[in-house]
Image 1 (cartoon, rainbow, N blue to C red):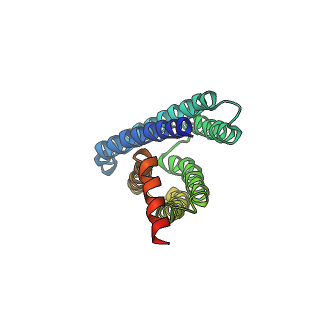
Image 2 (tube, helix red, strand yellow; image 1 turned 90 degrees about the vertical axis):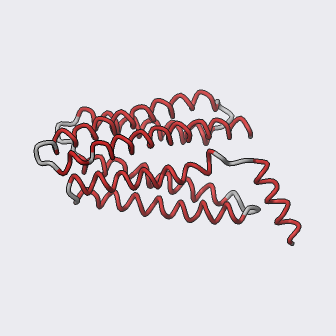
Image 3 (cartoon, rainbow, N blue to C red; image 1 turned 120 degrees about the vertical axis):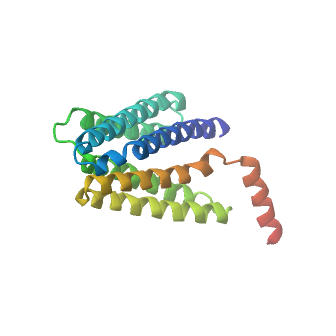
Length: 198
């Protein structure tokens, strides 16, 4: 169990770093979206960075498949599907002639929806830890809502879409942080406290 937790933490940690780099780049280049002459260049830069982020995460998720091994079929299938989705998303953004920030928003939507569903599924397994369960449930619903908002982001201006992508990335980072600092000792202490209260 600890080995799997470390692998999940590693993946989440890398995803958090990739999202932080994307947010930093987005807010660095965002003023260029307000200038008509620089809008195309700024949009192209954001699309390139998003494509690179998707491809990098796809490769990392694919590598994780080999670390889990055959005895963890659910994790292997999940990481394999996520890796393929990320790779296809990144490659599509990289080679498509009609890619725009609105396309990035549409491509990011399934990732947010799947992350939300994963949080809801994880919440089901924490019956003895109501605080963590409630937090995961709320975060899962928020992430699913963000997925639908990203779909609606395809109707915004490039500047509005970039802002939306930045906010969604920041909220996703905030949801990843508890996974990174999750402690089995803390969880077992909380479980002991809940049993004493009963």
